[in-house]
Amino acid sequence: SQKIEQNSEALNIQEGKTATLTCNYTNYSPAYLQWYRQDPGRGPVFLLLIRENEKEKRKERLKVTFDTTLKQSLFHITASQPADSATYLCATNRDDKIIFGKGTRLHILP
Amino acid sequence: DTAVSQTPKYLVTQMGNDKSIKCEQNLGHDTMYWYKQDSKKFLKIMFSYNNKELIINETVPNRFSPKSPDKAHLNLHINSLELGDSAVYFCASSQRGGGYEQYFGPGTRLTVT
Image (cartoon, rainbow over all chains, first blue to last red; front, side, top):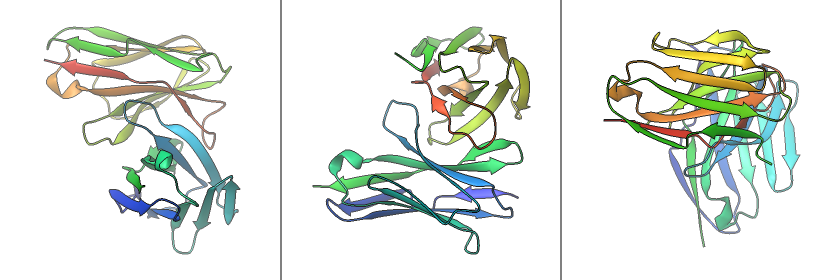
């Protein structure tokens, strides 16, 4: 069956370092991948979208890559700050629907 | 200005009751969605509407009925509430369906006792 997986349930990173989160997909080829941030008690907030014909997208300290050979997207936060602590969700299309991964809780340690 | 708003934010009710959650977006988007986020934080799509027309209807019990009076509003009515319906329900909208970013509301935490 078509799946999207975020392997790490939680990740602790020291402030100032680069945080890297992984999203893997199996048994299909998505047209795009999206990344969202969710803070406790709030709805997800869109961060970046990368399409299958793009290798990399950047926005300020954020960078997303899309590797169709590895069937994987990586989400990087450079120069991480405690304010970056949140749950990060990847999402992609499955047929006409959008499906979300279970998320990775990122903790940036001061 | 709130882009996607939901009411109520919290809803506590007893099993067997019927309740509604309202959603409005002022972004001029064509597509609106309802998601359910369970206690394990897994976000799952329930319904999608495009210009008041039902596009996606995931495997959701018939007790859940969405209604879209116009493309800026998508309400969710739930009949005969069950304990397993307890979750956070998010409304979202996007410019169109497919590969467009979604804007989420603040969520409605439903607790069924």
